Each structure stands twice: as C-alpha cells, then as structure tokens.
Length: 180
Image (cartoon, rainbow, N blue to C red; front, side, top):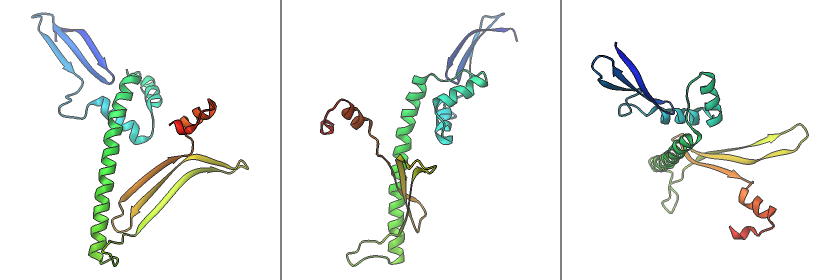
C-alpha cells in the first residue's frame, strides 16, 4: 500500500486515522470502530468501570501501564454522568415492574387482606461497615434492599449516609443547618 498517515485524531479510546495515497493523493479515513453498529468504545469502557467497581484513576493507571491513550477526566465524567442517569432510571423502572409482578403473584396466591390489598411477603437485608479491633468503628454509610419473596426480584434499594458534607460545612462555619 502506497499510503502515508497524515493525521491521527484521538478521543479517548476512539481514533480516526487519515491516510493519503502517494500515487493518486486519495484521502482515506479509517475509524477504530463503527459506532452505529456497537456501543461506542468510550461509553463501553466507562460502563465496564462501573460494572467492576473501579473509577477514573484506576482506569487511567491501567491504560497507562498498557501504553494506551485514555479518556480525559472531563470526558470520563460526562459519560459517567450520562450513564449514571440511565442506570438509575433503569433500576427504578425494574423495581417498579418487580413490584407489579410481586403484587400479581400475591393476588394469584390469594394473599389479600380484608380491604383487598395484596399481601406481599418480602426479604429485607442491610449492611454497614463495622470494624472490631477495639475501635468501636461504625461506618457512616449503609445500604439495604427489599426483595420480593415470590419473584426473588429487587423491590427497593436504599443507601443512606450519616455524614452530610453540607451539614459539616455549616457546622464548620457555625451556621444553622436549617439554611439548607
């Protein structure tokens, strides 16, 4: 092939290379992916980080070790914010549908009270970090889930924090927390 690379454009993990033929001066562009056929690589990478529980720092370190150009913090943050919204909306919708299914299963089983309200047995579980070693440490954050007994599907997830940065800031500035 009598072509030379004349330009490379990188956007995170996505690249576009421009080649020029040395004989006829034809310009050809090659992209690292066909985004209309697949999830864009940058979005797939951020999705993977969420899935395995790592963040931007670990991703950038991993990419640097492999000598692969990686996303800027701004691009990662933008994709992460978009993805977080989709994940949250999907989770709420799936929990809503699980609630409807659990209700229907209760009605089918004949578990209805005198007012006609379906009785849905659930399994609830929660967690928070607790450390022994004579430190009496209790984490400031915890999570709990409610799972439908019949459907085995998640009906609710709650995450709570005892630490609030706004309240802490107000305390530091000697302001009332009623301001917020």
